[in-house]
Amino acid sequence: MPTRIQATATDLDPGLLQQVMNLVQSSPPTWKSALLSNVVIFLLGSRLLVSGLSLSGIAAAFVLGTLTWRAFGSSGFLLVATFFVLGTAATKVKMAQKEAQGVAERRKGRRGPGSVIGSSAAGCVCAFLSIYGIGGEAFARLWELGFVASFCTKLSDTVSSEIGKAYGKTTYLITTFKMVPRGTEGAVSTEGTVAGLLASILLASVGCMMGEIYAPEAVICVIASQIANLAESIIGAALQEKEGFRWLTNDAANVINISTGSILAVLMQQLILQNRTS
Image (cartoon, rainbow, N blue to C red; front, side):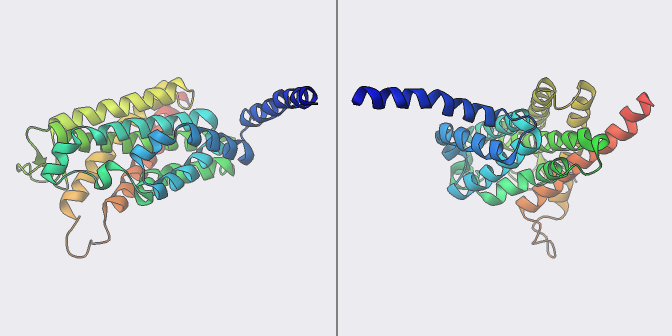
């Protein structure tokens, strides 16, 4: 009897596994395949997730991951995963020093749902536009470009800020170029700016290698990210924590930042690349 039961279980497992694999590899992706893929990946990567996100942040990231997989498949998910790993690593750099100086992220860099939403709002909008086919086939690539550009912008911003706080020797206020302490809103440093640029180039290259964007569009993503980050630094220096702008929190500034990068990339693609091909 034990032999028969074991044989029956063995016969069923390959078929069940094959069904799961077929669902995960659905092309185009479905909500079921997106949900299942995220459950598996989040379980396997739980230790890494806990190191970079709070529990509520993980819940928000799960929604983002599911939406991303449904819209852009495994390549889009890999881009967001790369963004998360690099952003978390930059946040952890010299954490003790940042905490001593009072410029570290709260909870030792473990981001909450507000941070997840602030970092992905523009990408989520692009994902929804893609899922529901807004604009038809002609706009499908634009939504994917906007998606990639939004995360290039946010990664560049995160890395620039965190590396600047860790290694910036001289920090200037972007609006006046006066020397200010590390962590000041609107402050920039050479070290942070260069690191942010390299991070944007790296993520845009990942998007290009995964087939989400073309090489000229990768260049556009990098340029758009740097313009958006410059604009955010100016907004931070001029408006954040000022009377009448208490609503302009870091999360709100993040939404403005990534939305700017995403919109700029789409506009530049239409104005520059489309004119070349027409």
